[in-house]
Length: 75
Image (tube, rainbow, N blue to C red; front, top):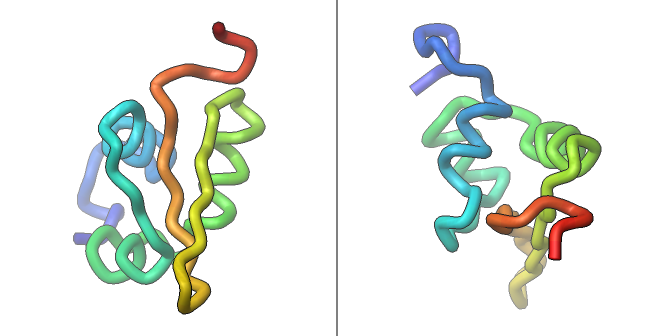
């Protein structure tokens, strides 16, 4: 599913898909399932916007990202 046919931006999709759901997303799954070619850049944008991003690396080195329900600065 590429984002050229959707009416939402990649950033909005990631916030809706990940925020507070407990889901994680890797670069490979973001690319193959959702057409997001540079997940690391989108995650960086979310961090700049104040979202709490959790990064987890598994034993083979694959990095997955998840987004907390809270934003930076919230208790």
